[in-house]
Length: 167
Length: 110
Image (cartoon, rainbow over all chains, first blue to last red; front, side):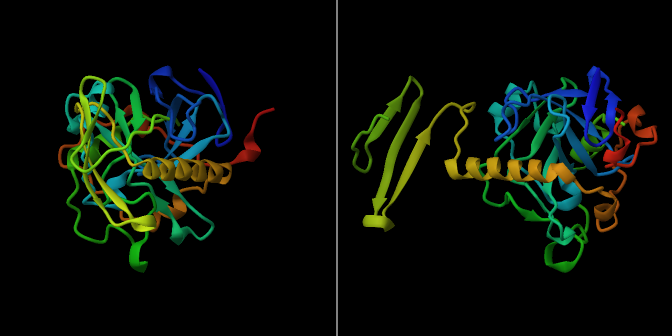
C-alpha cells in the first residue's frame, strides 16, 4: 500500500504492518488505521503514523523505558474487545508530547495504546487509575528517568520492542 | 437529559444490569460532593468525564506537535538504553533493516 507521509515522503507499507484502531484515538476519532515507524532499529521511540492523514504522526514510546514500574491494570472489557485473552499478550506504547524544551517532554501514562500484535488491532485505553498522569514527565527531577533499577514487566517490554514497524 | 432526584442509599437502574447508587451526599453549595456507587458488567467502560477530556486534549496536543515531531535521537541520548529482555522474542525482521532517519520534509517526492 502506497502511503504519503510527512516524515518519510511517499512510502510503501505492507498491509500486515497496519493496525486497526476501530475506535480511533480520542479527539482523532476519524483516523482508524495507523502503522509504526521506527526511527532507528530497536528504538523505544517510534512514530504512530496515520494511514489516512499523512501529516499526522504521533511520537510514541515504550512506557517501560520511561517508567520501569509501569503496571497498568487493563480493563477486561477492553482486552476482550481486542481479542486478547490476557494482559500479557498486549503490547503497550504511550503517546509523548515534546515541547521545544526537550526536558519538559511528557508521556501519557493514563491512556496507553494497547496493541494486539497477533490480530493487528489496537486501542487507546483510558485507565481509571490516579497513579498515572496524562502528563508524566519523561525527565523527572532533573535526572534521566529510568535511572532506578529496571524491574519492568519483561514480557510486555519484549512485545513492545517486537511490534512490527515500517521503515 | 433525564433528571431525577435521589436521596442517599437510593438507586437508579439503567437497562437490565447497571445500577447507580447514591452512597453519600455531603456538604452543600459549591462544596457539595456526592459519592456514587456503580454496579455494572465487567465489559462496561466507566470513566470520569474530565479524564477522558484530558486525554483527548493531550492527543490533540501531541498531534499538533506532530507537525514538527522531533527526531528522537535527541531523546534517545537522554534515556537509558533498554535492556535486552530475558526472554526476547525471535528477532523481528523489520528491526534488522536500516531505517531512514526522520524527519526530512525536504525529501518529499513531487
